[in-house]
Length: 138
Image (cartoon, rainbow, N blue to C red; front, side, top):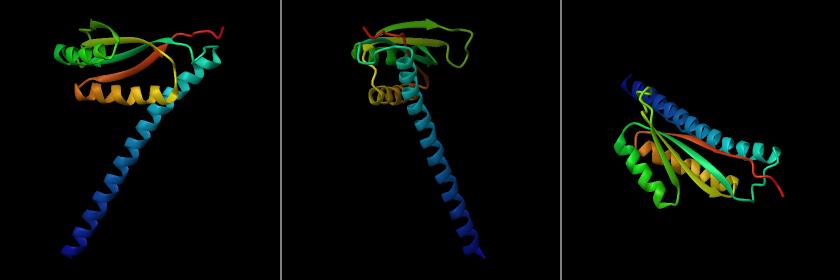
């Protein structure tokens, strides 16, 4: 009877681990898919992804220290930074906006989204994505 219980618990743990891995993959695929959809939407609106765009990146952060760390990291990579206090948001009372001129390529934007999500997570914050205005084809 003890072996049967151990077997059932082991199988249950394996199922839970598999579900966790699948959900994580789906979450990353959703984020990656969002990047490609955003670039596709800009293209359909007449934007030329091969021309430099002013791209805005958004972070929600829990405190001044996290804001300083993310700010320093992004400034060292050439991003222009703007920080605002959002006192009505008790979970993330600081909003960090980073801006940089760049071409829009799906692989690069996916990589940035993953990297910025990791940067925000490492500082107990949240990466809220990016936005860019249309740059018309000449």
